Image (cartoon, rainbow, N blue to C red; front, top):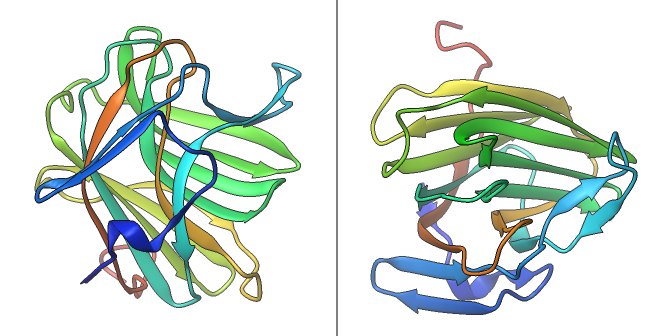
Length: 195
């Protein structure tokens, strides 16, 4: 994997503060920041903090962060953007008192899937998005645990896509996420480990 420089991306929406140090990047989110389109809630939120760089076909991108959430809907992970109405965010979100691994896939309207990860608090979480053929495959792990499959979603192989680290704080001020790495490399060769 090749390191992506924190200064090479462009923010979708500026955070309250960004601090780049030798051990990564700390991002403080704006209160009420979020990314969602319409489904169930009826609103459009496009105030996420996503640091985006080009995401070419046949490559993978990984974002790592220290999981330290305490408030409803605190979230961090990776954001993959085609345009304002077509995007995917994947990572960990705190919902109803527990951390869950999940993804929001948006093509005009958003959907949402979650799976609890109660043992992940305090660990280093890595989210991996792999762009191969007509699909985006999302995997995740905590520390050095085995990768787990989060989502497979359609992604136009011809589309110009950007991606990178993302965080949001829909319900509070003061969320600071410590991102420790941002890397790119070749796409995963298969969907299943034994293929």
